Length: 327
Image 1 (cartoon, rainbow, N blue to C red):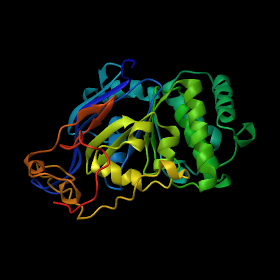
Image 2: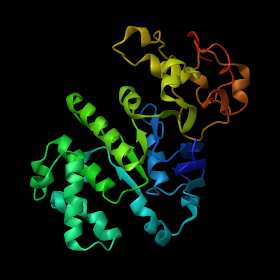
Image 3: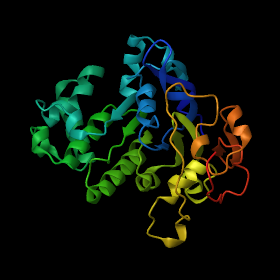
């Protein structure tokens, strides 16, 4: 493995409802992303995935932890220091129509990062915009169009072009295909893979679509209620999940190959509140194999295979855990 481009440790983000009550959106997580790698971040809605992406770019200010990018801790940089790094850290938002200014043309939208972050002269900016439009499989005839003139797929391609125009080292992809028709999702995922191969850009791919994550990710991190409960190479986590929550997620994937389908594993029990998280396993109330010791603290992720980490006291046991009653 190469030296990590991004190294996150002890990341915490809380949303306070009062002086004493808070929602634990991120609860001390850590992960790495290597140059040119895609880390898929999956989990149910409300698990904290988008908050992680926004904290990573400091669109939200983390409450604690470290976010090291190429050796610099983004969490401690001043606004001017962070602004200098903005060209290397970009994001593609979930809703393409909502993330594009309706009054700006395609050219103005894609050109804006060059205006803000470079001293590139006007003619060269136009050349760069046209070249990027061709990279995302559009063309120069889109330059003077507005978002309303574009399909959802074309709008998202413009959003991708805007994010990549400064040749960033990292792009956070926040559910980039969730609002698109199934027929064009594969096209966008293939485009992102092509661009990554050409530009050697690292991705944090946030999604609840496990088929999309499988298509594009090198590794997968699974989130549950603000915690990362399992991390592994994509093929490993799909075939041999070790955390009971991951197993339930993966069993819900409708693979066209019946040999790859895991046995159904529906979850039982109530989802605990994210308000004032207790110092116990966050999956305790839904876990079919919990132990009394799971109440004694949040499990620490342990190595259970090659580059495979799971935060479960029973992760080293037979991975084909059967469903039982939750604690």
